[in-house]
Image (cartoon, rainbow, N blue to C red; front, side, top):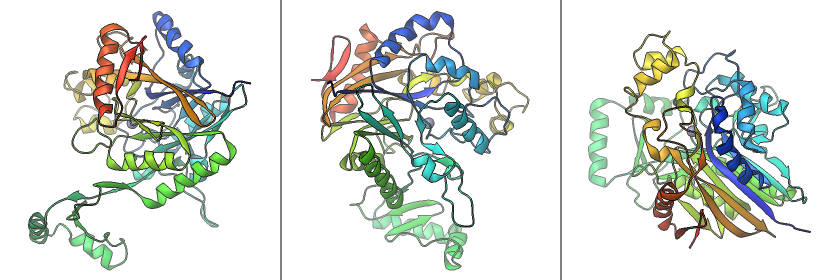
Length: 434
Ligand SMILES: [Zn+2]
């Protein structure tokens, strides 16, 4: 019996509105590719509600929501797994987060990354392929606001709904001379007065050793430490869930949402994301599907297991958001009763800046990974283009990239992946290792 497992996964499905009828043919071509796989992963970067809930005081950038009935459109691609752990999962607070879960559950769709408790949010989704091979999928949010963290129950206090989170610590590296200057400024401005007072009175925990806190930002003179690293408790907790999942499944896949870069270039993953991805694979994960920054980041074959640091956007309908709360209008100095369209116009300075003005946010790949007996035996990526040039309802919708568009995607991904030891070429319409 064939014991192969074929897996695909997308970047962010920032899916907000129905697709036009004329898009059917292009969609079908992608759906055929996706449906040829056993495990079909997407990151659902929206909430599923009918605007019956209040908005959070903050959002993942724009308050994202999709009408529950419109989910049918996304399902046409054939996905059988939805990652919920991302920075938009809490845009409509606890009600919105739970509504998204309930909407997916009502249709018997597999998902993970959010839940009614931390235990629930970190639980994998299990998918059994027709040949019996079982996959477990864990989703992790590595860029989140603290209020969206799922929490554990104690004997006396109930569990808190939220996302499965990975925190990180960061400290900028400086030399002794600059540290002395910073300390001098801190003393003159008294920027740390309350910080120090709260530590002295036990309301804040002490700063890590070798770290100087200036206001809210940490600095270190230790040049050997990475600038960012995973929070040890979270990393160990997530690794525990991978090891446990490996007992019940043949393969474990991790979907991670991370906006953070290395403070040098948006395409460069933060050091803690690299640390996290490697640790997941060291502990049994078979592939890592990253997203978050809305554009492609490098691909690495680590121990012959693929890490997609970011697959970019699979769908980008950022301008299709139906309503936005007063908080958004206030931020951009417009009337709170403005339409979402007017608000987005104001934020993007007349559609001259923002994600929808950059073609890099409209270029992605759909990986096809074939595993057998724990080994990756086939690895290729379908180049996909999100119709950046179109100003109609096709804008932000994916289609298979060919010709110059495919070459351009190869050039971007190939350039990024080279320093991770991976040379890529385009062959028969697919991007593959050279
Ligand atoms: Zn995001």
